[in-house]
Image (tube, rainbow, N blue to C red; front, side):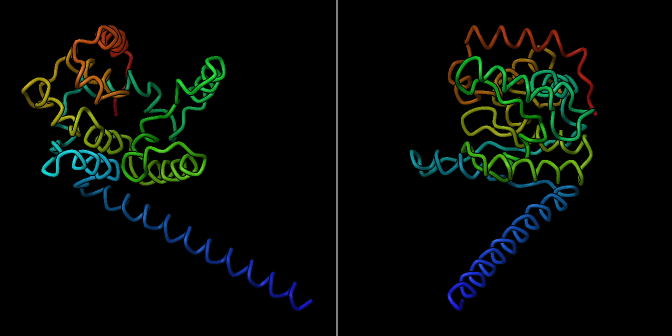
Length: 234
């Protein structure tokens, strides 16, 4: 009986420690989101990971990253991103359940993961805080952070953050750095073709940075541009 009581107390203590650690971690995430409602992040978890990878090859490597306020980013780029990544962005509460179902069906048909179904908010959650690993634990944490983002921030701020922290090439982060890297101009002046092409790069930004003449990239950009007129922006 004493052994059983000791085991119960030990398990209870262990579970209590895990619960406290979980609450502390979620509070840390939530606190940062509240801060970023008013102030802009200087970097993200994903930026730190990429910089570490670059510096493993070149110790002097730096990221190209410049914040641009929502009003200083072309409306064409906002429409292109929504058309490419999340057509229901202004309507959903963080998750596109129909999109997730379609992605699951497509993956089952192909027998491997070829589609994700993640919304802009989910992608922002991953970019801000998490790693690129694929696991149920990471996806669960992503879902919790997504709910936090939607609860604290409005759609305009979520899109503003996403446009500023998305990866757009080798060491290139944010719309402003991307516009200057690829077109030599500010993100405020991007036209529809340029915006569609930048949106088309998002799934594989490092690859397309090295392969800018890709026929697939050009075709995908054309398809995005054809949908931009139906995209609603906050």
